[in-house]
Image (cartoon, helix red, strand yellow):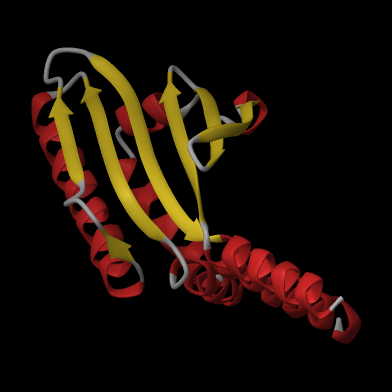
Length: 195
């Protein structure tokens, strides 16, 4: 009986310390969003799921960027972010908890942008580069990269287009994934009780 318990404990320990991998592929084009997800364990695909995010898409981004009162829209976004500071802080804590457990094996983020006007396209392109740099600087402080991230921004000066494509592969120990989910579930349960 003792040997059975020891063997079972070893199997559970090996399982908790083994890694699972997930591959995510997100695309945004012409106001449509799509997310494709694969989950693997021991190189065996356990899950393949495609999520259509079209109902959450923002088809008017190109139109907003083309309008003359672009600074007004930027100001509105900044004010909205200030009003949502508490929510952003909560989301940041959640992502930090998860990111500390994750290893990025590979990540590529490509963006094509064109506003139909060369000068505006140049400004927007610079802004996108700045946003990507900030995001990955934060990620590098909170998580681990096995390969250097590949970032691309391609400006289209004579056309109107906004497309982005993100593909990443992450690895996490099963025990750490369970712990992260438990921590997040407990945190949200406490907030629901105290709300």
